[in-house]
Length: 362
Image 1 (cartoon, rainbow, N blue to C red):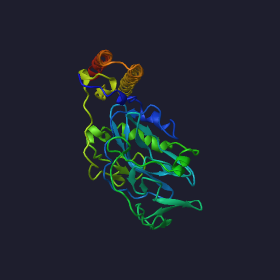
Image 2: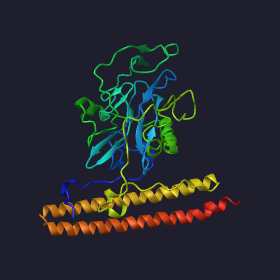
Image 3: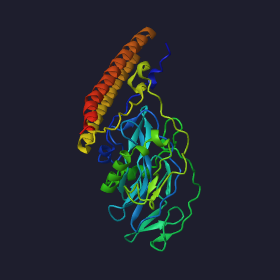
Image 4: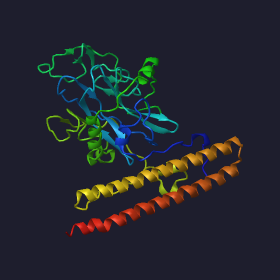
């Protein structure tokens, strides 16, 4: 049996949650429940679409999680919810053995966003893309794409010593190693406003678009950025990715070999319901999502329970035989849960399949 590194047992697992739920969640620090046990893909390489009008703030694209896999939320221009407010982008950070999602927010200052170099003014700390002055937003033409015949509030300030990389997360293996300044931490505690309705709709449009999924686009999303939120089909405002920011391959599901729940990887996404009835499709999709959300929550709970048992045995100075017995017990628990989950998924597919096939005959 392989030697177990006891102190590195992953503490949490991802929850399968709608990204919409996270958008209306806790904005100051971490979106509760959004944790994944493998890193998001590198940030793709893309150009910024031209600013559509005065008062629009650039919100950079990022990888989000839908409970099954990562998907790309395109960068877009968004009208600030109020004068003098700026956008702090969301980011992923390694903590306690998992990657946690930290939601973006609006506020009077740009807070900490993990040191991620999103570009176009977001170079890891603060924002160099523009500033508020006298109730108007002034754009830095050096790092933003602005048409000066339409927008006259512009200035030119070169940004020096930019480290160009495409790493999309802080900490962990290969992650950004930057830490927040005391000022950034203070800004993160200020009063914030969450994403506006247009941003929430933009995220939902990305989540429901199969082409945005990392498994489909391999890190090169066909819509990397848009001129306005949710406009994924407007040819003038849509910018495709030029290339991937680096190689990406999601870890395989170890299935029947897994000893602990975190080793299961992510469950395969079920096929999109196709009954010929939009309402029925939506109902089936919701049922699928509810099942997978519950299953991921059960995985998380079992992972926590097993980790607690590891810690208790460690405190008791358990011998190698006791550790091996515990591992065997944990594998049995994990496998029983996994097999039950597979059966539940199959039962749901069988339940939905007759209705789906039957609809085609009407």
